[in-house]
Amino acid sequence: ATFHGYYFRTAICPQSGFSTTDLPISRYLCHDKGNARTCDHVTFSLLPYMLVPYRQLSLNFMIKAVWLRISRKLSLFEAMDVIEMELNHLKDVADFINISTLLFWQQMIQIALGDFLSSDTSASSKTNHEQLHGGDGFENFIEILLTYQSRNDGTPIRGPDAFALDFYQQSGGVERNAPFLFGRASQHRD
Image (cartoon, rainbow, N blue to C red; front, side, top):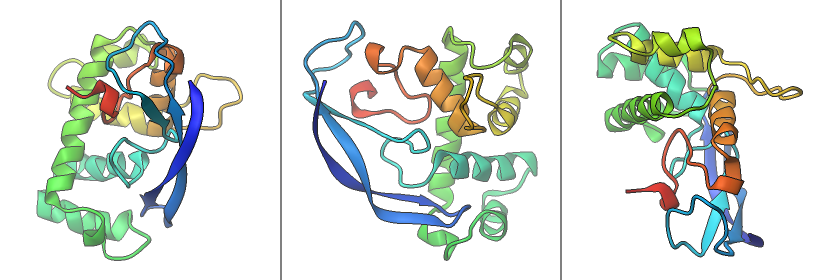
């Protein structure tokens, strides 16, 4: 691929207080190479590892918001209040999420769990992998995401971001047009 310019994107992490409307995202022109091409796209973008395709909020914030709801067995309405009090350091949480988005994030994580279980990556230990089957598998998966430490030497990334990056790299990265674990880029949408 050849660098083809960039576009600006909004990126927000209410948990850390980070917010920008002008994060530059690199675009590349595809030269129709690679052994796992899944579409006829001419260009593609590379997102920073903490962002999810088509979402402005950080992956870490989304997973922690779902974890608060699941681990404390909160209703959707109760979860919104807890997220507001414990994770949000910007302004009114209603500016960022609502019940529908919280449910979408939960669905996104459930899809990621299925994708992870069907893959042959080693982004988690065998013991952890066995804990992901059965009734508590979803909750166990979120726990693994939150406590994950990258196995790549010299990589200070931890948590869901590190898990997603390790999964992407172990699945072949850009050389094999690897899918993102959380969210779908346009070339991987059904």
